[in-house]
Image 1 (cartoon, rainbow, N blue to C red):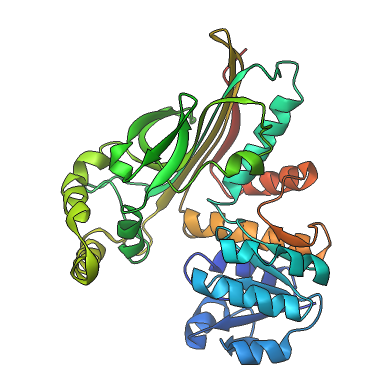
Image 2: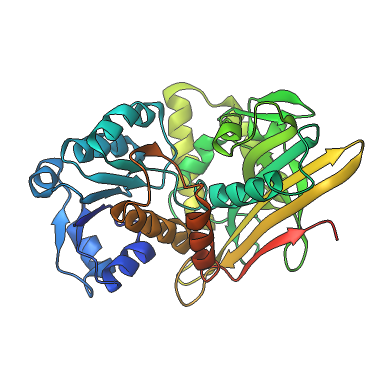
Length: 380
């Protein structure tokens, strides 16, 4: 069984190196082989220039295709994996086109595993752990009002005036500011056109409690079923969102105003100009530590009283091992690869696993990647 790891960008390297150091048979594919050699050439010479045609020639049944490439490659590589009886793993969100491959993957007996990075990924594992614990607890009652929050953010370890720093092109962050979101607030669906229309404060129960600015992103609603929320539960709040340093809204106020006015090709060109400027002014310096904060919170209330309330919190930062973001994205990807190879993940399209044994195993290892990982109970 060969692992065909495609893409050696910044967020891919630690997990790839882990697999190589563990002795797995890994073929490394990158559009620029020289960059791949710089990253892992001390561990392997099995490095190829990325080519779908060449990969197809070398792909065998029971192999694993890993896509750490841009998202528009995922479906094509997943289809290639299915056609060759191989598994597929990516850290990205499941697109409608990926989900449509479920039947073909099941018929072929292969797993297409997605959403196994940081966010999405580790956040899913935390959610599964909390929901399972609550559902099995004496406090569980279908009449309880349930509130769920999941906030994740990559932020500078040493705050800067802009309240944010970039590890790669800021263009993706700027484009995300133009995206709508859906969540649940006070039992009602909340549709938000722009992130800055729904910014609030979140007090994170970290080792040293800290306040952050947060806002919903994407469409949170489908994740209620993914996290095994029963359709009869009374869901008061359900939001998956982004976390930023306190003061971010003020520092970015002019950015919000301009982004709101940009339209068409001229708007896209201006976004690119802004991206280049932000990269010049607010990129991470060589060796500068980044930071990742992730909080997943589940609370059940009845008649105004809290019946169950826990928060899974993680705080991690860059150190001698490299960036926190890279570790926390790529290590879980490597765990998913091994799980697929060992038959621990059922055929078909899936996200980060909810199986308690896998959740416990992965979270146990993730604890070594972060400087702080804890489940905080808010009731004695």
